[in-house]
Length: 239
Ligand SMILES: Nc1ncnc2c1ncn2[C@@H]1O[C@H](COP(=O)(O)OP(=O)(O)OP(=O)(O)O)[C@@H](O)[C@H]1O
Image (cartoon, rainbow, N blue to C red; front, side, top):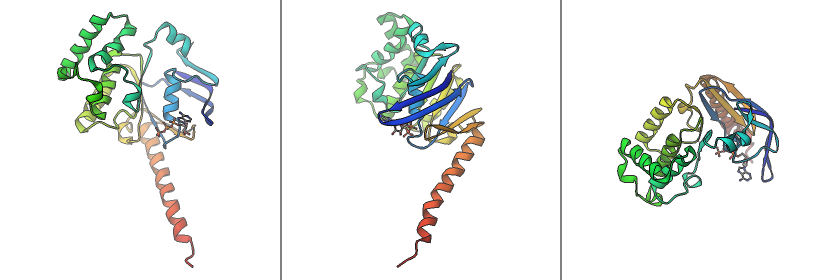
């Protein structure tokens, strides 16, 4: 995917101004402080928000035109599962993800149940999504994306609510997935070994390169910033 001279405003905030990015690597990490623009970038890449200037391209085609022809190109796992889940039961939610592939309702439900069975979660099929915990809802969101199998997967803090086994399973799934995956996270160890990590700072590229290097640079910057206020306080003369 490509962003060419992209500008985006959300509310009163100018999030991006003339942002250029080419995203071709199979695994890309996205890091940066709260409010840096990670979710906003994902919203552009999955077509939820439209750039106010510039272009978002997938291959050679403009994203919105490409998605109109082929809705399952880019899939996103939201930071908050409640922004993603629409249907009342788990199997209905999973089945919905199969509809863009042209599957009928019954066949979609059968495949949804089969996936739950393979995962040892057959008992979730008729569960009300609202009765699941936050981490369990996040698992449902991941399974929805897995079953939909879009060409590009955007995962916005996918590990945030998962327990340790859930994090390990998701990491295995991500490693095994054949698609391009872009992951936004505050837990750097999840992306440190990626071939590419992008560090966003106030809507701008602050770092872009191998995961080890960019994560180390971000950590060093955070360490410096954390020391600054302490030194400032220490220098204030006491009355
Ligand atoms: N719905 C909104 N309306 C107006 N401004 C918004 C909205 N959502 C986010 N912003 C602003 O856009 C900027 C980028 O926010 P974004 O959510 O993309 O950051 P982020 O890097 O994903 O942060 P976090 O790590 O907290 O998830 C911030 O300045 C934020 O305040």
